[in-house]
Amino acid sequence: MKRWDILEKIESEFNFWKKFVNSEFDELDLKIVIALREDGRMSDSELAEMFGVSVSTVSRRRTAMMKKDYLKIVGLLVLQNVGLACADVFVELSKNAGSREIKEFINELQNYPQIYEIVQYIQKPEILIRVFEKDMVSIFHFTKDLLKDRDIIENYSVREVIKSPKLFDQPIIKYGD
Image 1: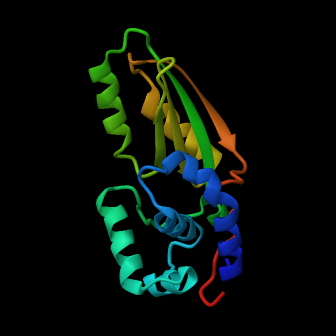
Image 2: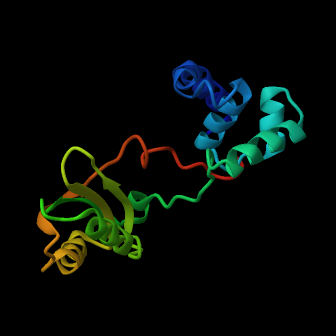
């Protein structure tokens, strides 16, 4: 993403985010977060130039947000761009499942590299597991082997993900752009 595109994105989203995180972030913090969300490889010197502040100011702010666990810069494999199949697995938990059993189950799920997200809901005992594999057949086999014969599970369904426009359809940024 080009610099002016990032500045345009910051401008369009700044007021939206400000009403949610006003007490934790000032204007510069919020602009740094939005810019890094668009291009996590931006250096402190690029951010400083973009916002008209010193490199040490940006570095200090970014580091403080990272130490508080407000900001995490991670590498994200764009699964659909490398030909991997993705699915959402909706798991309905047994009404008799205790909180300790649920916690143990979630902890176990975290050990599988093909599970990239686990979402627990409060309204009803359900868990969403986001899975990737080389193809849907492999996802179905993995899911069946993972979830079969578990007393904690009432039912589950697997839904193939064909597109995730908000997250994975972001343009891929190439060095030098």
